[in-house]
Length: 129
Image (tube, one colour):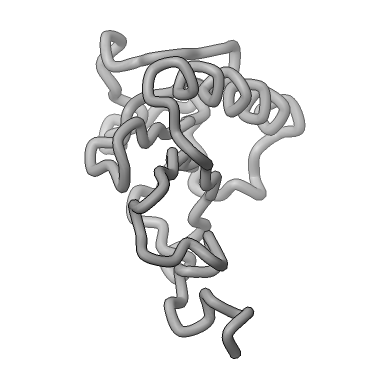
């Protein structure tokens, strides 16, 4: 499956897995942005989203939908952010592809306008420029 001994995502304890399919699995983020923050991780070790196979990408999208249903039941969020960091300059800190599914809650930030654009704070609220 392309596992590496030095990769924390290649060595996740089976009991930490919340949901899974043939190509990927979901775990709670160790450092959550909000309650219910989940990571979707392909089994195959690769550092770049763009190197995933078509089958892996389809499996990820299917698991995102399953994760959403799980989070809706368990946490009842008001919205979601879904994102992937690619490369050091894209903010990636663990060099094994992982997709963030972040539940959002009314009031978790004073102004959620711009959503994921907030990775560069001064560009997040394009409506006020």
